[in-house]
Structure formats: C-alpha cells, structure tokens
Length: 311
Image (cartoon, rainbow, N blue to C red):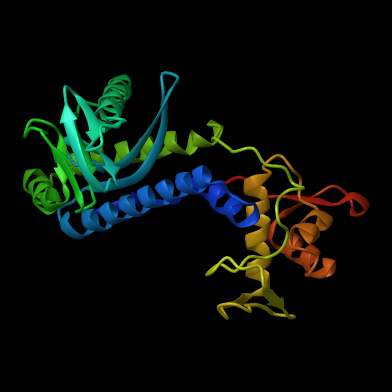
C-alpha cells in the first residue's frame, strides 16, 4: 500500500475551527463544526484501516476534490489497483437508521441524505473522466459506515454498504483480487498522478464561509491544546497559563499568520495587521523578522507587505 495523497483537514473545517476560537458560536454553528470534526475522525480511521489491511501493491488517495464537466465532486478515499478503481464515501453515523424505498430515516422518522445518491453521482462523473483520458478501468463504489454504533435496518446485501465489522474482510478481498503485474502497477501510478494533478486545481473552488467581520473576532494567540487565550509570552516561547502547554514563539506567530491568511485570503500581510491579530503582545520587530524569514516581501521599505507563495 502506497499513500500518494495523504489526508488533510479541509479549508472549510479549518475556517470553522479558527472562527470557533475567535467568536461566539451559536448552537447550530457548534453542531455543524462537531459534525465536520466527527466526519474527519471517521475518515482518518478508515485511512488507518486501509494502511493496515491492504498489503498488496496498490495506491491510496485520501480526499480528492475534482471538477468534472463543471461538476465538483469530493471523494473521501480512492484505492487504485491494477484493474479496479475503488471509491469510498465514509460516514461516521451513530445510532439506528431505517432504509425504506431508497431513502434513509432515523428511527424517529426524520429523513437524512442518502449517501448512495452521492456515491452514484461520483461514480458516474469519475467514469466519464476516465473515459476522456482513455483509461479502461472498472469503478467500484461503496459507502463505509465506520462507526460500530451504527445500524441500518432493511439494507440488502445488494446495497453497496460496508459496515464496521465488514471492513477488514472487504479490504482482504481487495488484496486477494489485486495482481501485481509490472505494467498494471505503472498504469495505476500514472493514473494516481493525473488524479492528484486534477485535485491540485481545487484552489479554484470557493469554499463555504460563514459571515464574519474582522472587528468581531477576538485578537490574540490561542493555545493549540486547550484554545485558551491566556498565553504568557517571553523572548523565545509562549506558555498557556491554563494547561501549561508551551511552544516556540516563532511557531506560535506563524500559526497566527497562517490563520489570518486562511480567514482573509485576499488581504496582504503587513507587520501592523499581524501585530494587531496577535493581540499586540508580540513586539513588531519580532513579527517583521518572522514575516521576512518565512514569506515573500512585496514592495519597498516604506510600504512593505508580504505574501505566501503558492505551492
């Protein structure tokens, strides 16, 4: 098993995490963040199981965002073998659900989105993309119910669900079917590179951002462990007065700069902006030095700004 694209938290999730620290969230906003965090945890669990149980030569791509014929698709996990492309939608549902006439309901009767609808749409669009590349590989798609506390009643064996207790056996079956032929392995890796290249165009996709203004957000340095803003700063480090977690001053300032870039991607960086964003507790001279060392200088000395170079 080779992981050619590791999973990272999405920009949308990172935005919500940052805003949760710096403004008062409503119950609905907190619930949305918790659901996204729970989904991310489930995806990471499936990644770990894939790396553990897939022993044969194949490639794992974790979290792909693709634009196909003007349609954006997000795929939680892709396993590439020499003959088959496996795609997985990972759901960290918890509780009892009922499937009826192709729809899914909670036991209280509330309908939820059927992940099979998303899976079928993704499979169709990915098949069209492979055809446009003249890649002749079959696609198999599954919905992984990663939480052992999830039960879906009335699903049939023909439905492409994989329950927690079935994950190991299904991955073992993929192992059994894989043929480690040199030509097939080269084809598989070339396809992985093309898909990653398409994913890297994801920056053109606008993420959903809740409404927020600079003035309403709390300024300062939040502890990475407990999110407290009670942070004591000295020449070399920052120490949280609540949980006593310490980090270097440089890394703490860079975290704040990256957070500012995430929340205000169109803004140019200046020493004054980052000074205020950090709560005016870091000397401007130190901030200017960190910006100069880690970001690209733009403009002359009297009007110096900085920017982050695109990868």
